[in-house]
Image (cartoon, rainbow, N blue to C red; front, side):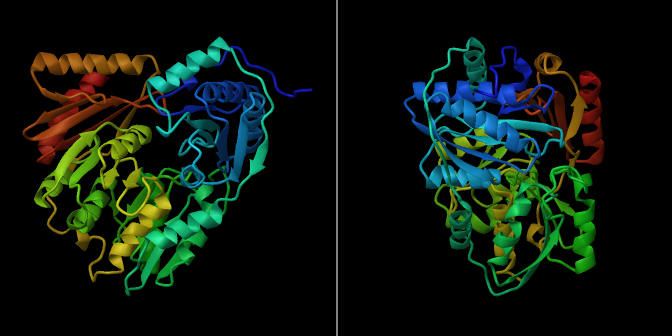
Length: 457
């Protein structure tokens, strides 16, 4: 007898911009996971698939949710290749290695411990996003599920994943001392093995015990306050750099040798300075949140800047579509396609910086010498509701139109001025509005920020 029940009234707000995400035992439980499994299996069967991948992160709720999800999927006649506990990049690597497009990664990424969710791929597009997820929500609500008997097989991708990283990274002669903070997240299961493969790396592990209560700090290295212990450890040990990894392993944060945070738009400058002369396609992809310093530098290097919308799913698809060699998001997702397979992987991204350092006498901070600097705010998060946030964005758009401002509206509103820019957008991962402001001078930045924050509030 089936121990799970079909759940009829799933909260539609858990179907978000890039994934399904909710608080466990509130809007997400085993019956909901089972129902989503039934829907997912039926959905991909209609697309002609016979099997899919499933993996899960280290959250306590991930194992029971994966059991229920798999029960739902196999009940539709779809076979499941089960990766078990793995990072999201290991799951992505398995998709490519095993040539299985559809799959579900059970994770809430960098969200607080009480959350969980599903990153879903229906086909070779990669993670579903936007309207794809809303179409799946409607299909799930209709409840016309198929039946059958699928099988489950286990697959351990770990060694092949490690071998792929070893093959891609070629270190120079200089030994690099690096602190890696996995925030007790899922990357803790593999980080030591990844960095210990390289003789010229001295690894100082920080918070590498797997513990999904995240007892030391929130697992999001894109937020500076989460990196205080990492900064201290870099200074205390005289390390060349610090690397922070998020809850499911697909995002990175960087600390330089002086204990300063290097935001990802500046990390991207270091990467472009290294690879621009080595790649054929010199178009450089980055998201709307990034500093003007990045396109300035891309142009200096002879490249062409391409500003695109925020979101792992959108960026990864754009990377393929435009045959970009490298792309970056301020949130810490970075995408290499020069000698890596378009997998956003925090551990790998950290190693690419280690690789550069191992071949130069420069420090991380010196690798940014000569960059034009502006005055930028951090990303500001304003609490809202999932319904209200989109109304606010429309209000800001209308205001910019009335004022005659130059606007990029590919993702929210990015208003461009001669002396800076303002970005206001609806978060796709939570009930928030996010904003960022930049100016040529501090006064410019403050004026722009005051104008738009008054409008939002």
